[in-house]
Length: 119
Image (spheres, rainbow, N blue to C red):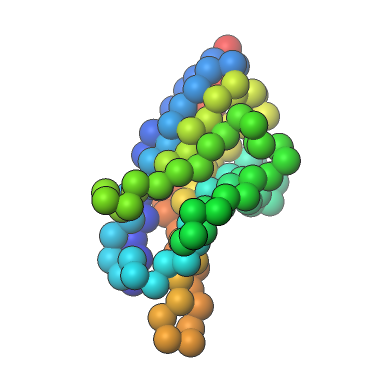
């Protein structure tokens, strides 16, 4: 019911910045929160940042102060601004949407975008 497409990943040097985008389409009216996750090789998927329908945000300790989650409701796009990137930020980054239709909760995921931080 919701389609998510990430973009903006790539190779960046340590200390650099990237902005990830997540274009959402479909039954967007049911979404109550959107989030960014990442998964590095051999590691579990990690929740980085969440933005709720009331615009409140939460961040993981590992990215707080460096990453900023935001959204453009007019263009149905979620963003993750990443500054002061470190090699340990290298991972596949995923967009997630939590939605409710009636009494059913759903989790939707994008396909992921690779971020590599290396000199």
